[in-house]
Image (cartoon, rainbow, N blue to C red; front, side, top):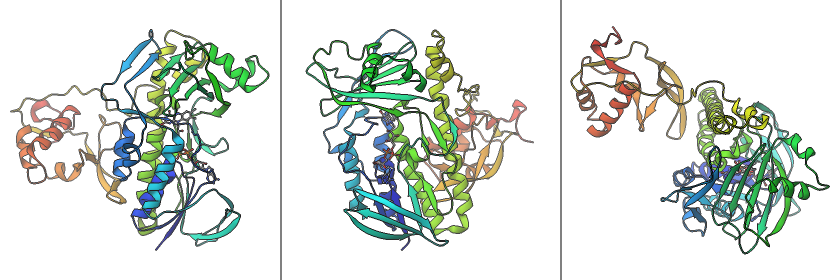
Length: 467
Ligand SMILES: Cc1cc2nc3c(=O)[nH]c(=O)nc-3n(C[C@H](O)[C@H](O)[C@H](O)COP(=O)(O)OP(=O)(O)OC[C@H]3O[C@@H](n4cnc5c(N)ncnc54)[C@H](O)[C@@H]3O)c2cc1C
């Protein structure tokens, strides 16, 4: 049985380790901190639940007393408004508790956990990794086939792409009149975020340009933090509140690692990509990367002949994900930059180079139910690395000017086999009918309709169809 060593038991490390153990590997997970411990990333975006379900780890949230978010106070480009969410999809967690629970589930899958443990040495001897660790003052030598770095954000990491340098200064409060809903605010040259946590504390964060901290009066970080916070309304009506954990500062710059995977080493979660915290979806992204990273690792270990395909898939996926998020965040900063000309905002808004390429252009195309359809002349099928079950392999993906990126699957169906065998001159309903052995008619209609709306299926007499 091949062996894997994972460094770091945050969400990325725990999920990655659990998936690989589930796939039959012997997995060693090394964590330097004793859990539970505080950690940023306490506001979980809605997508976390389904990702945890995919990893069979959703009970980590379901059985815990974390808080659901029914609304967020937002003062961004407009006046203060309460954005309500009746479905309460966002979740506020105590990361100490959340990570401890995830780690417990990883153990259930058979992961061997060393904690607190220190890595003394890690060397590739040409065939395997030799990893020497110190756990409970006892040295252990591991010999593994693959090393996974899930050790989170680090300033020294080699980065291929980097967003605007950002520093977060934060502190946790306790008191009797603290806010019960999260709050996000745009300031003159900073943005602010207040997060009420399940343990009754309130985390307040200020995001600034790093050089700005030097210009703030105060002898200590704590004093400067309070000055910065005063410019916001996060603590209004919180008389008598006390800081329970001294202020900390952390780099919050978005980046993409420049070498996230080789044949015997892979980076997972924030170690590979760290996104701008403005979306509060770093944990979701880390888990998503862990899930696809586990498939990449499985391919490297079980199908070494497909290693280059797997490596190319992973690099492409991370770069795409980084870019997509950078544009998304840039649009949010632009909303403020439109009426606030401080460089804090314009710099961040400028990180969107043009229109959002990652989203398909607005779909305009329509067709009548009786019009005969054909494949667009501009459509090409190009072999592209894709996730298929537990492996990465090549699939014929659709390349088309109306698609932001190559597309191999839609609604879980592989598109090329559906389209390559399509008889000419069928109407929308006839196309869906022709796929009826592969999927229900309604799914066929949905896929065919989407292809029409994106200009991939076009009206045969509209002059654009392939000859
Ligand atoms: C200011 C700020 C606010 C944020 N707020 C949010 C938010 O509200 N919501 C959200 O979803 N995301 C948020 N994030 C992002 C989120 O914190 C991360 O994306 C997420 O924690 C990444 O998970 P991870 O498992 O990759 O890394 P981490 O959660 O950082 O876990 C890494 C683990 O590795 C361990 N480790 C490190 N080095 C070693 C070593 N050498 N040996 C052994 N163990 C090691 C660490 O102790 C840690 O337990 C925020 C980030 C910042 C900077």
